Image (cartoon, rainbow, N blue to C red; front, side, top):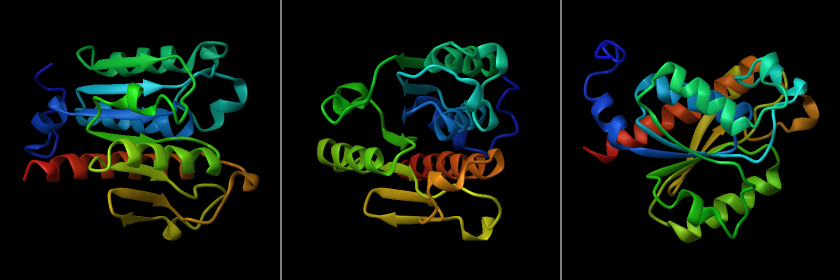
Length: 199
């Protein structure tokens, strides 16, 4: 296992190994971000989702046809441990609500928001910021459609980071490259925040 992270940026692996990252949702954003984080050396993840894998998810989420009908948290945990058997994955097969955010993710150093709908994103940000005003939350905000990747950016407001174009919505449809770009922006921002917190 010593070679697994041998190509990482020097000094990042040690920090990521001891950090804990929460991921709220295991769909297009959450599954892609989780894979990227584990490949980067994240040692502890809390993943939460109540949904099952459906065929319509496969155009953008890190699952396979053989996973259809399985719980997303179970399938994603399997793939994360297939990448790194030593990763500590705490999975909760339940719906996230404003009332249980703190209990589910209280031990996380930061939260990656990976919801689909704008109204759910809003209350998650509010609930997290109220419970943990000093802990960052990294959000996906505008990832639908095709092309215009030059519009994707990261905006910071306090401890809230928004990744995306800030304007597109799900009515435009979703394609794998654009979803994955925003998910990886979230993962990259999570790594940057954690690494900088130790400087």
